[in-house]
Length: 407
Image (cartoon, rainbow, N blue to C red; front, side, top):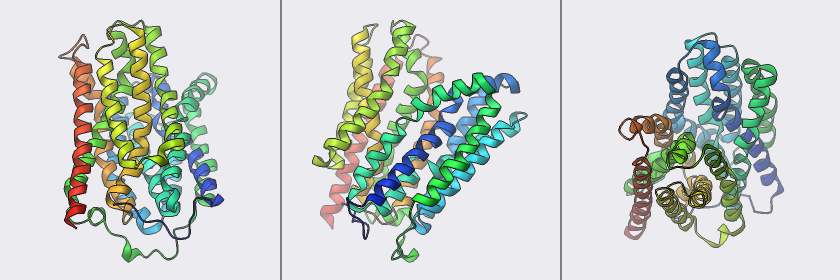
């Protein structure tokens, strides 16, 4: 069930950590410019282009949906050609998307810009980077993934204030133009110069499609794991979009709600630091169980906030830790369950339902508010989702174990 090591790599290879650092910088820029910008620049875009909030965020949602649809294809290309070419393409697409958004004159061009941004996300965010590291990092794969997510955890911390500063100084169009330059003149050279080519001994004929990578009898394990990770992705996006509103609905003041919500990001990074420092003593599967269990515990705490600041603080700390480690689980658990063959295609197939549920999460909670205007039932619904994710994850491990025993 464990993945085999990539040839010729050791955990002492300094080239690997140069690659991880390069990918980390590119992840900060890619997440910051493609995913996080709409939270800061969206209002100005909507006002200048005369659009509704529904159309603006619907366009962004459509981009996420498209990202999920093309993710398996992107993963397959990484298996066949290596991550260097695909990540470089993602940087080019990111530059084109942000440039198109910078020059948008109406709803059609803006929609096309966000759709192109969605394709760029599928070729430049965590999943293609994880698949690339899997090819080159050998026994250091898990630590390399954790280190990469430490970089990525700072994307919103860097780009929310940067976007606000640039918006105030030069406007949203010029801000997107600056971001196009970052993709073209920072991310693209990093990917081309510091991501190595795929190992020469790797043959295209040896790379299976995602179905073959799962292996005979692994369909149930894959289905349960995809369900668990997709529910976790839904949870993460729903809470990111609505946490302040939900906290104030419990009776917290707006100021306290913002303070509590702002602690989630640092706790994500703290969870990843702990995994990097101590995770080697635990199997990836065990870390996954802990992450899903803590996510459920966090939502249980959330149902009991009732305006009590210390309970809200406990929720933010536990949830932030679990959500931060969940990103590592996405990259490491599939390798332990299914091995290394066709890993890019496998991650791509797992990413598809995750992106689709992520894209639906904000509007799903908005629709839930129509029957729960006081937001009193919503935390319990989120708790049920978290418990379902934990159950699906444990069923995935059980199904994988039965498959291994039968072999």
